[in-house]
Image (cartoon, rainbow, N blue to C red; front, side):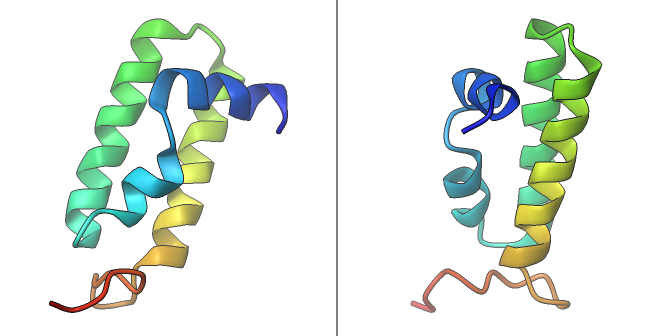
Length: 76
């Protein structure tokens, strides 16, 4: 794991698990905003902030279909 990802994990926890736990894309996008807000207050590096945004956007794209439903959660 590179240093940027270690910093993100230290401040934000397991981002992939947190995003994949969201039932809808809308909730994941709200979580993204909260993660970014939390990191912005505790981290001065613009590069790490940009890495977080790109990383979370990538996870959201992988996790949710075009209708906003989570592909990884099982229907109950």
